[in-house]
Image 1 (cartoon, rainbow, N blue to C red):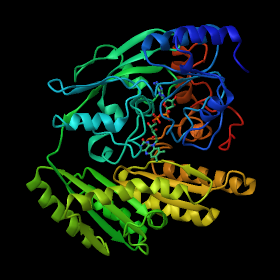
Image 2 (image 1 turned 30 degrees about the horizontal axis):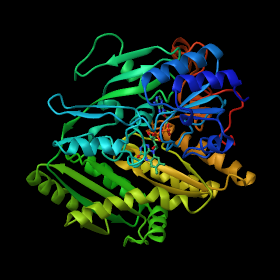
Image 3 (image 1 turned 60 degrees about the vertical axis):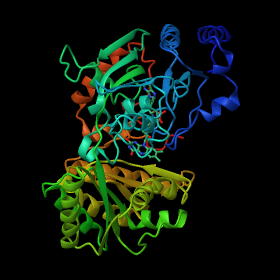
Image 4 (image 1 turned 180 degrees about the horizontal axis):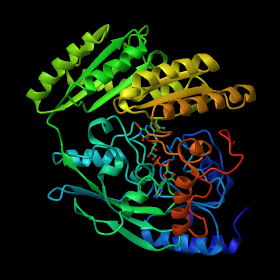
Length: 469
Ligand SMILES: Cc1cc2nc3c(=O)[nH]c(=O)nc-3n(C[C@H](O)[C@H](O)[C@H](O)COP(=O)(O)OP(=O)(O)OC[C@H]3O[C@@H](n4cnc5c(N)ncnc54)[C@H](O)[C@@H]3O)c2cc1C
């Protein structure tokens, strides 16, 4: 339902600049999408640039019970930034004016719209590193990363976003401006609200500033590629590296379908007849990683790799990692709809999960592509399909449920990094019993009594389905 003209007038007065308040249908349509496959158009969009604006708009929305959906750069894959109940989208992507590096405290202070990769680039200039590196790091915002608790290839060694958020400024669903945590590495004062907000998918408040931990930048890296003619054997190779006493900074996996998709998108010289390739990066002191790289090289050969290749120059190394970044756009070209799952299993179960995925692909006769951050058990089974084909989608829905079932059977979880949002909420009861879910709902109710903050996300309602368009 469109907002009343007097509400729109009040919002324009709060923002003070009419061009940052969007109400034209053509503008609103572009806010109906994110990188998932849903489509929901908001009634109004505010492009905010300071905490006072956010606080005043949220107070107004809370008073009038208007839904609010926070949004970064809409690269989310679980539909978190989609305004499924209409209302106001609060877009923080233009709010990128603060990116301070405090070298002595080894922290960064950032405004919510700062692009993730820019934080690491700024840290690099003073010999530091911001490790979380989602493959979307050149487009995603830090607020989106915090809301989703994003991870990336370096998560294997360095952990994910939550491990680097020291403090936050947040506007609560009632419009109060609060601070959590701070600039110190250690802080056990009171409940850890920072950790509660990280990964809350925009349902508990709007992140307006973050204090991030930085670490010393490793001096050097060495990267290797190992080629396999058996996908499950590649899984064993991952387990062998991880139990060898060496902890690589990245182990990424691509199956044959993703190898071929990249080659037809942008020829990179990949072995198109291989069943799987692994990309491995070691980082640290140059002498130490030289020995480690030799060891991993031999280990790959011993585990049945057809070929192992070490990048000899920085150009070769850059090319290896570019290949991995190309997978998502390359596979997206094949069919109109790409369902990107991120079910995650304990590391020891990687070979079994790969086996189960192969069985699911055959059983449901689906176009399944598997790649991802295999070193931490976070594989990305992607189903390529056409959402307009109802018969095909019935099959796909069953296949998605089978993927989750397999991950949970193996001791895993529905989502390792993309969040639940809209797309996975109907599967939540597969992982949680009624009372565990109830405790989460009580937290939501306490923070957001009028249920205005990103309503309709995370928690399932009877009749919820995967395909919601
Ligand atoms: C090609 C590609 C590769 C990807 N690779 C990875 C990967 O390797 N690892 C990974 O984890 N993810 C990955 N993603 C998913 C996505 O990039 C991440 O989830 C990212 O964190 C989303 O950031 P965003 O700025 O685009 O947020 P959006 O998509 O705009 O929003 C995501 C969620 O954050 C909430 N939100 C946004 N801003 C705020 C705020 N200020 N306060 C509170 N909540 C807010 C939204 O409501 C929504 O629920 C990938 C996506 C693509 C398209």
